[in-house]
Image 1 (tube, rainbow, N blue to C red):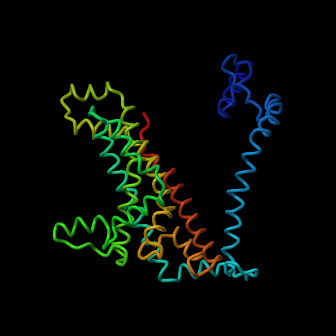
Image 2: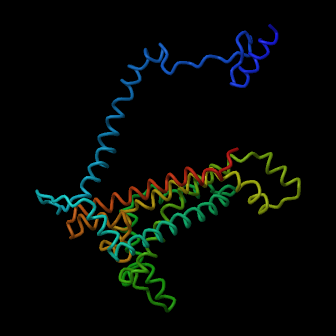
Length: 325
């Protein structure tokens, strides 16, 4: 009897199942996926969530699916007729030499604006985190450009960069120089838009970094100071590693924002002279004289795929290097 029992227990253990009568060590039965309470509360959940679900489907997923369908058409904006061409628009985009320049401009603009705004924002946050007189006013001043209208900012900076009547040209002429042709040189036009976009978004990065710095435990900084670490060493060894969740968040949101930048480019360079990103090319193809609504939908779909791919890569790879306290 004992032999059979021991053999039975051994077989059960090999199968990963505890023998009956194990007492408190017996596994707890899995909870059913939908309990009676869940079924009772489901109508309430559906009543509360259904309006939001319908709005998301109507204004997010339906336009997305419709845009993908439009990208398979040869359709002139305003025409009542459209010809299905399958992947013809996609084939044209990837075979067109100008598309390479659009992708290159998008990459340069995104890397420069995201990197510049985050680096300057981190520097300003470090300065504003100190006990300075008037730092509240300084924080509000730094953050102000982010909440201002992009159209208004673009109009002001167009006046500043104007070679003839602009403030920047006047300052350069006072020092014996001349103003560059910001609006006719494609490289200078892109640089001009990058400068303004960084200026607009630096305050956002600075405020987010500042909030994260104020959440750093003071005892860690005091311990590092007692160990003899200076201000620079404390920042790079203690503060900066703890800012990795904030850096990850800003990287993700800033890239998505830069890839969808439109208002400043539209106001400062209406013809897209050297500043035609994927987002702005979507506008130019549909409303900038080409009237190619189908091709514009193709560019928009490609931009969506890039945004989705970058988001997935960042969430799956970069987040592994984030150290949450």
